[in-house]
Length: 178
Image 1 (cartoon, rainbow, N blue to C red):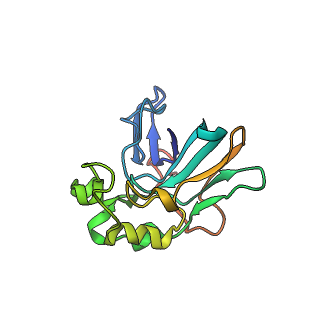
Image 2 (image 1 turned 90 degrees about the horizontal axis):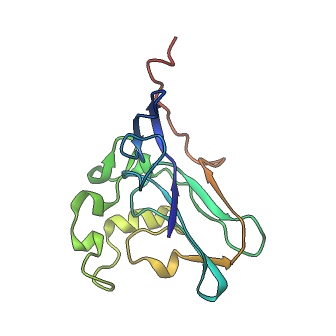
């Protein structure tokens, strides 16, 4: 499975070293692995079982920016998470620039589903995410209502901060201030 995420409040030097408030990649401009939570994820697996593409928006790593993700051709479902999750985030999950998923914070099977399929279910916190972003993965075993398919060979688009979504406040670096 591949994943795409947006990073926020980033500052890098000419050598590509720096830091992002959300979605950071170990201080590198070009990611070598997955970003550090919280980050909203667009995930996909192309040309899988039955010649289908599988795609989702995941909040398993928390939320940092609103997103719309889906195929550009008709007949398949565009999915979205455009609610103000940062502004409504439960206190226990608040993080600078985003809203953590409970697994990141509590690290227990109840939230992380580490003991295998069927060992956990929706919780108060996963319902917080699901109630606001109906199409999105809200906990690790949320497959039935959160995985979408389209015929293999489809083209896709990820839109960060789509029109109508909450405004994302950006912090200017001292170098940008005049």
